Amino acid sequence: NAGVTQTPKFQVLKTGQSMTLQCAQDMNHEYMSWYRQDPGMGLRLIHYSVGAGITDQGEVPNGYNVSRSTTEDFPLRLLSAAPSQTSVYFCASSYSRPNAFEAFFGQGTRLTVV
Amino acid sequence: GEDVEQSLFLSVREGDSSVINCTYTDSSSTYLYWYKQEPGAGLQLLTYIFSNMDMKQDQRLTVLLNKKDKHLSLRIADTQTGDSAIYFCAEDSGAGSYQLTFGKGTKLSVIP
Image 1 (cartoon, one colour):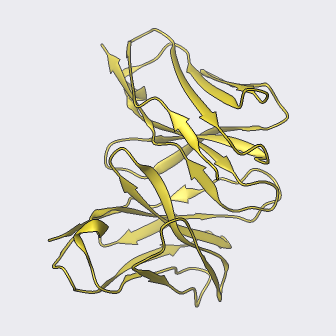
Image 2 (image 1 turned 45 degrees about the vertical axis):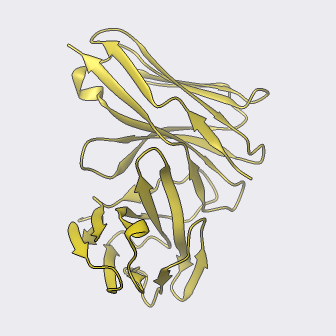
Image 3 (image 1 turned 90 degrees about the horizontal axis):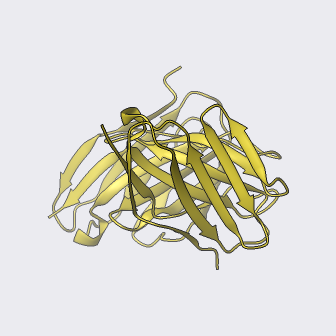
């Protein structure tokens, strides 16, 4: 199993450009999420999905869109990149509860907006 | 709202015990978690504890939970250089919730 795969690993964008960060998992997990990690800020939830066709906003959703057309894929779209979106982005997936769940993280995408 | 606090840095000598502390605010959390992040990698679950337990031991790891004070700690016995990483405390938002709130992370440096 590949687990959670994120592409690309690194990306440089110019202000105003748009792009899609890809995330795919092969564990048949229902729950998927996107976080951003900034120095001294920990991880902050951007968007999440509890299944195909269902998405919801997290703590910092502005400037990002998501969709979940399949169980496997959960892309994150930056509509018009801004320097404030320079960050490391992590996708995570997990199986459904009711007990403690383990979130499996991808390797991250390091995005720089200039 | 939910908030999870941790100290940012910890330095220990190889072979000593490390204790990483965390405080949280959400009393409805059902589980609390410790994740480890090695340089350039994603987070990996280390261990977790049910909110009604006060201790959990897993090989070199001991988790202590004081629910009254909302204080969580992770003790790593016989700390090795391979334990150097960032450790994140996290809480869920209660039964049926899929959301995790993470602390800012504690960077553990192990001195040989």
